[in-house]
Image (cartoon, rainbow, N blue to C red; front, side):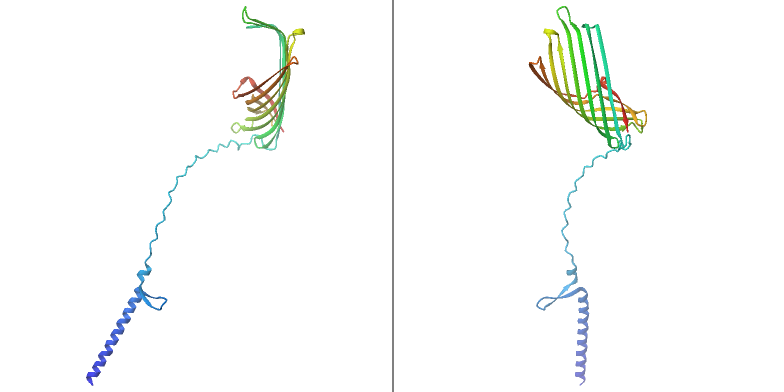
Length: 294
């Protein structure tokens, strides 16, 4: 009886210890592992460290950065910020010139016994409108007349070379129309003195005649010409009142195309085509005029 009781007691203690050990093992495994079940119902114990392991992704290849070329920053010189002529004004003006000469028995170097007279007349009105501050567009007309009559003219280059001409006559009428764009810039902060530049496109038509001799020795030529000119005319303006200014400008610099047709003695025909470019400042072609700003 005692032996059976002891055996049963040992068996119970052993079972209790095994159950306790299994419980402790399950707790340890539950902390470090996880049970996964597949589609067939089989269960697997997988360590948590395997599932928490992160697979390193391949690093992206960084593109090579291109060095950008930075242009130097422009300096704002505030040239057009100062208003010299405001938008909405009209300008009107013109230039007039006249010259006359008369010679009697004049001797000058190789020129002997010069006897003649002549004149030159030029008028050029223009009008324009300021469509924005310091910028105007307009139109210009011009008329020019030249006349020369040499009653006697002798060119003496020595005893063996003398040229003696009589009754030289020349007359020309020229008409021009131009479209222009003019820009102004004040000198410093002045509201009295300013610079301007005028861009012109000009068409001209001229007709004239020249002749030598008289009577049976008369030789005459009639001429017509057309010309097209593209150029610039810089200048300076000085206000003398709030609405008027004196302007000084230099002759047009640019390109000139000219076509000439001649007929001599109503029989012989001739022609000439020329193309020229001039960008030199000619101090003898200075124009002075008056402009009104309305």
